[in-house]
Image (cartoon, rainbow, N blue to C red):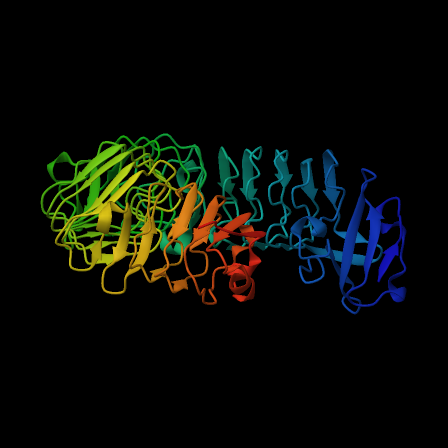
Length: 515
């Protein structure tokens, strides 16, 4: 139940006996702003700021405790209407335009997304009572320049301050869980010497052994010195940073598998020659895992050296690499290896065995030639490649072909078309068109389906907006749903069959072709 109790000053009303657990009421802040509260316990006389119940309000902006358009200062009280305010609920100030927040002493927890994307928030005062800062509380608070962690905080989620554009970070010297030793402008987990949250002015102390997951995510770093004490660099540690140069010191023995470095601006990569786990042999401008000969991170100036056997997952994600030759020693290209890079030209050599899923997705490649040695091709390898014009498989490949110069990759034994492009002509003999074989970025203006096709997988023509012409005389039910097709052309005398066939019958218009 929502009670509209507009109180001038939070302690002015005292009607707690009329409430039940879960009830909500509105009271005014000392600035005259209406704020929503929800009762946690009538017995304990505790409330939270905001509703925080995503089951009742599935959209996070519906959870906002105040008018999201309100600018200026907000004071969050320790007491309201006879109740103690002990936490700020999930998404309580989601995308609000507030600029300054003063949290009074007594509040213990900031729940997830509490100040998510408050772009105007430039200052917040934490109380000494604060104990917990949960996931993404200040995510995207791009105007928030400085934070001070009080002495009683014993839990900070790893992404609490992601993309907050912080310049100054301090931790109370009496805090037993965290510290910011040597004025390093970071939050460090004291017991493990893990730097869990940094900012653009962080200087990593020599005592740090681990750079935690997402520690610098979104920080506008141009450069960072990683000291020799560091042994572990976790997933997403430097995600969405603007690093230009990366140097891995000698004691690093673990580098995460997922988006550790944002590679868009990286020009040079080097590894200390005394590192026993990684190397950058032949000044290749890459990080190579020595024991497996896997290239795990590259950049715009990478040259793949001899001995490398695998291009790892995400190895060139978002890099400005434009052209690369994959030598014959490389046996595998991992998932998302060149995803969202500026790649325009790639040469694959004989000897390559595996191409992982999404390997070249969202690149600018125009031509792709699959060597005869390739026996595994993952899904969506050229999804959203708007400039792709030619696809071919080298003769002699035992598993794939591009028969009749069809500009497609066909799985030979099953006669299924796996990957097509804007110049694909589906040849006779094809039985199946696989899921995501085409998308709107690389589909022909007109697709002609030969009469040999018996099966069309769901999303085979995902987002396709052209014309489909089918030569099939007796169409089977298909998993694909052609409701996005404006016009489906079918052989003369077969329209009724198409109207009865699942999938085909969803086309907006079905027109018979004249003989």
